[in-house]
Length: 163
Image 1 (cartoon, rainbow, N blue to C red):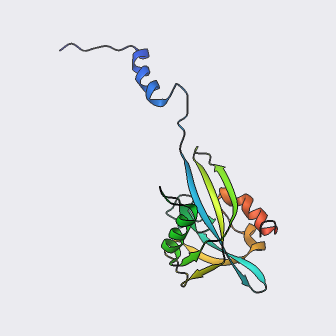
Image 2 (image 1 turned 180 degrees about the horizontal axis):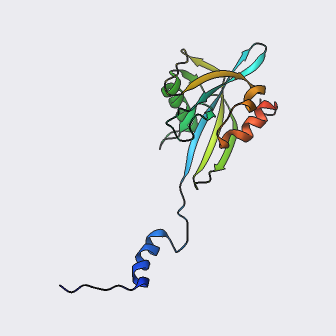
Image 3 (image 1 turned 180 degrees about the vertical axis):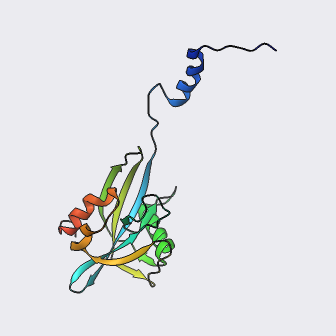
């Protein structure tokens, strides 16, 4: 059987077509995510529930608000209610949307993150997936190492601008 010799140009052509063009980065889809600003009055000031990722998760040991991805066919509020049940074992009454953030990470990924106020829920909070879960006064939020996508919100919450 005779071997076929391909030129360098012929070898590059199929790769270029698959990659969307020479030198063009592949775009990752925007992840649609929801998070809860679970609020309560504690010690005379407003507190919010924050959660710390585990050591084996991406962006390990960073702090975040409970929530997660919106699945196909779900509303933002429905996704948040499901996530709070899965992560914390509660049935939450999802309140108004407080903020919406779009953040691009260095790796090319992007997240569209909607934050909702949650002031009422049934059940006792159980830490089902996090390294730590705690109630924190809003003014103390800047002292925690939050995910990059949350930093603008942290600044506004601790400064009394959103609630």
